[in-house]
Length: 86
Length: 355
Image (tube, rainbow over all chains, first blue to last red; front, top):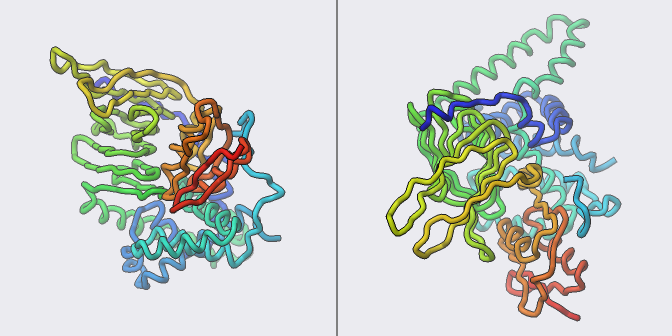
């Protein structure tokens, strides 16, 4: 049964459907503008799936610092994406 | 999502809440804390009273959550792209300084990969749960991305010859990493969805209005579905294998009890943007029966909207885009549209007829 199922359509499009290409490009840019440590911690958590504890251990910092870095990253990205205040 | 015909507007741009620096900073910290290891009911209560302060608080939290949700969609190379371009520019002037920075980006990639691999060994079988109103993105060891919607429970099992995810209930979006030697199987409500490299969603949500319904929507690629076995007088009969095309949604009715197993299945082609609107923390209704819309909104909130007995609900329809979890705005919009009153009563939002 499973042999029949090996069909793969590798055409692009998922990213486009799920999140506008333009928004994705802006998001990438905003992430790239973060400082190295902040970006490293954000991506370790959100892309590599590491827990706060694992990140804290890896960087030799406390859990609270991980919280703060994640928050700082989100804040700076959201500010640039949304343009909340003039 | 732009083509919502009528009904309740998404929100007046001119009335957009004013988010201050302070509110934005607090909102970002809340997102970080709520997704951290210290989350508990006390923190949730504290958060509830924080976000109850103003629409601006909720707006800031919503947008920070959007960012949190969307980050995994970014390709790591792109996340460094703009920096790289900027540094290349600087390199012309100071050719030495930027070299090690380039190198450090490479080292980071290696470190993260090593961390991820370490992670795999004890994560080969695990269960992932989201609370009401929560969403969670998970990257599995094979690179498959799994996005869990509110109130969802899945069990992941990675074996050398297959990859299996059991969905106990709720809704999940899968972007399956290609691996021809290991089929990717999602089992839900007795049915099996098999994919090799593809993106699709499954949804199995108890509904008071209808029978429980399993829905599988294919976004890209190809999947086959082996529906749960139907029970009949002769015993178990094998059910037909169904193949979905991109854009297809397969729906199978599940009766709660009784002598029959899963019932009628049908395939339609919904607006995929609407089906996965929850990814953006939105719910989209297009001429949906009010009772159905209410039950959908209630999936995301511990403050349920309740239709009281004196409402002529049968004829009422809802169109519009709403934020998941914002039941109070939803209730007010429905009330304004139909001339109902909203009454807060014991943690519920009751809609009642005042005419």
